[in-house]
Length: 227
Ligand code: ZN
Image (cartoon, rainbow, N blue to C red; front, side):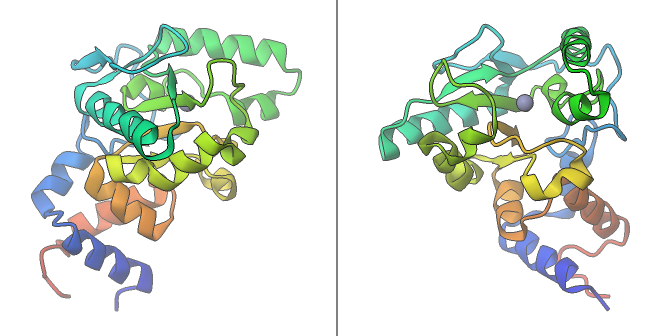
């Protein structure tokens, strides 16, 4: 017997024409579902090969992403302008292991409480920014990256619409126990349009989604195969 959640996942994957082959590619290293967190860390020399500067307004000099994610972000920002009159800013995209190391050390030094600091900053190797598939977004160059962004016009629009362009809000408030990171309404992660649409429907963290997909793939449960 399939669980309700698995049955829902199967029907959504079918509806969005995700085949077993594309799933395998997406789950492979360098695929758009590559999971990075404190359990799945990247090597210190991991750098994606197709990094480009995203052609959008930006509020720092660190606005590179992998090519497909960059194109999708450009379309997302254009839609924000066209549909809602919002100007969005790319603030932080690709970050190397070494940069993440400095960011981490600085945060740990500035905050006295290690556990609290680790909710807010990823260890080197555990940051999605090293994948080149994440971007921190601002609604104004002077915005601070904090929870208030989630209630701002830009934050609300982003949460409602980013899936249409292949992005997810990666760290929701209610998922902290699973993701190990605090609520980050500004941090979007590219997973491709099909998975973003499925995730929008299922409303589960990427950790749980990838785990479910791995077992579906292992059991060959996709493409109409019924157990
Ligand atoms: Zn981020």
